[in-house]
Image (tube, rainbow, N blue to C red; front, side, top):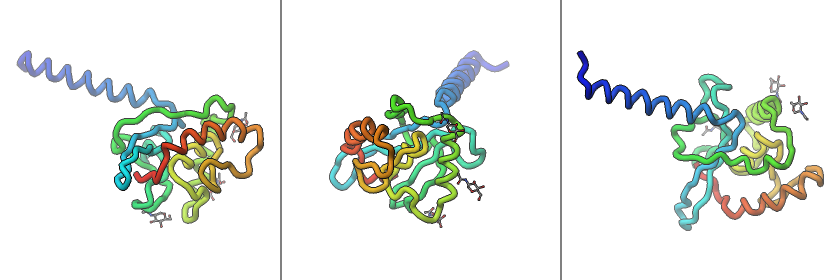
Length: 171
Ligand SMILES: *[C@@H]1O[C@H](CO)[C@@H](O)[C@H](O)[C@H]1NC(C)=O
Ligand SMILES: *[C@@H]1O[C@H](CO)[C@@H](O)[C@H](O)[C@H]1NC(C)=O
Ligand SMILES: *[C@@H]1O[C@H](CO)[C@@H](O)[C@H](O)[C@H]1NC(C)=O
């Protein structure tokens, strides 16, 4: 017979496991996740960004992101459990862009197809916002190229706020 202590411990482990599984399932496909990171050189804080894809790309990982230059700067799949604590950060959802699963998957595929050259020659936030919203700033920080004015006007203000926090995007 297992001791009471063993049973209690088992119950605790099951409980903790359920909490972890549940919190993972609560993240919907296509959610932008941000991770607070420290910039070593000037000690400023910045964020890393990734897109949550869950189980949609079996065997590849549950997030997709552009990794830092130190790791090749590629768009690649990764695992949320390797990235530390995160916040959901869908900060342009009020802009009424196409954030259907189909649209997001299409953008992911487009980026994966483009491996080998920089379709979006920028950092991880640009990659993540492109995946979710179809918008990226491919020319320079804080500016948007080749987007309809209706989109730009609301986007630019919000984007500039974010640019302050966004630095080298090392992973
Ligand atoms: C980045 O992608 C290129 C093209 O697919 C590949 O050759 C290279 O090995 C990748 N680099 C890293 C660090 O994964
Ligand atoms: C959103 O994108 C998907 C995939 O391209 C497309 O099928 C759908 O019609 C789009 N929806 C809207 C409202 O534009
Ligand atoms: C990605 O590449 C595949 C294979 O060449 C092609 O069938 C598909 O249309 C491409 N998707 C996008 C979104 O470019």
